[in-house]
Length: 259
Ligand SMILES: *[C@@H]1O[C@H](CO)[C@@H](O)[C@H](O)[C@H]1NC(C)=O
Ligand SMILES: *[C@@H]1O[C@H](CO)[C@@H](O)[C@H](O)[C@H]1NC(C)=O
Ligand SMILES: *[C@@H]1O[C@H](CO)[C@@H](O)[C@H](O)[C@H]1NC(C)=O
Image (tube, rainbow, N blue to C red; front, side, top):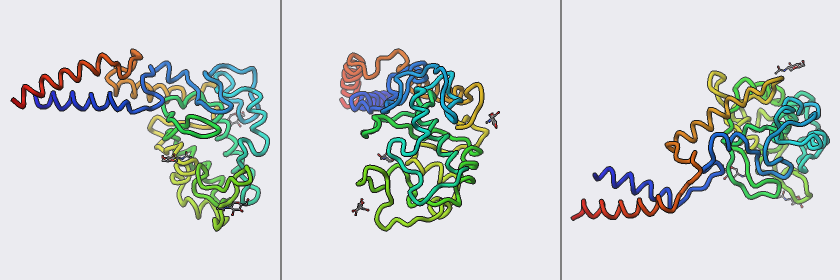
């Protein structure tokens, strides 16, 4: 009985506090049919007639529009300058371009969305599991290039309207700033990616044909819903009646024990 009261109480606290996350109350299919709430994103993924160059893999089902993919291949998309310590090497730049296409186009980040309060978006993805092989290639292409920041998501001087090096932040190699491939992939965008072994379900930024990340996103969405005991799949999170019932039960059974 004590255990029952404890569990009920825990549920109650969870319900009342209503810990908010973007995926709360979304069904598996909702999570898989949602784009990030960002400045240029569509609301829901769908086919595009064609997508520009490195963004073309997402043409069958994309969160970006064709016009966006053309514009983002120009310098300073979202006022972000990759070349803040001089021009990046061509191979490193190609990886950042692929990452940018993923950011704008991927229809697979729904299960990893969290709220943020920024001018360019109201949501970000956090901890998307990137395949170690993908991460290693990105790292190998960039490790000898130069940067002045070990976290491109946060540490900049934006006074001029685009990112410049903070006072005292020196231009050094990616190797100096990040040390290892997994530190690099994890920290470059402030935890947007996590790095996982290729044997686990993981994302790739480079593919042709069928999007291999569809399966990975579905697995994660199913995991999220089953961790809620399936309750969220009916789309009624923190239902007031449930809260009321839990309050009554906690009081009644709690009294029973104490008296
Ligand atoms: C930011 O850049 C401006 C010039 O654009 C400079 O005056 C200012 O000192 C810089 N601030 C920092 C913290 O680097
Ligand atoms: C960077 O990540 C930290 C930790 O997750 C988070 O608290 C912070 O809001 C993030 N900043 C931005 C600009 O995304
Ligand atoms: C995709 O196709 C291009 C052109 O045929 C090829 O160069 C590239 O290696 C392929 N990439 C992947 C990840 O299969």
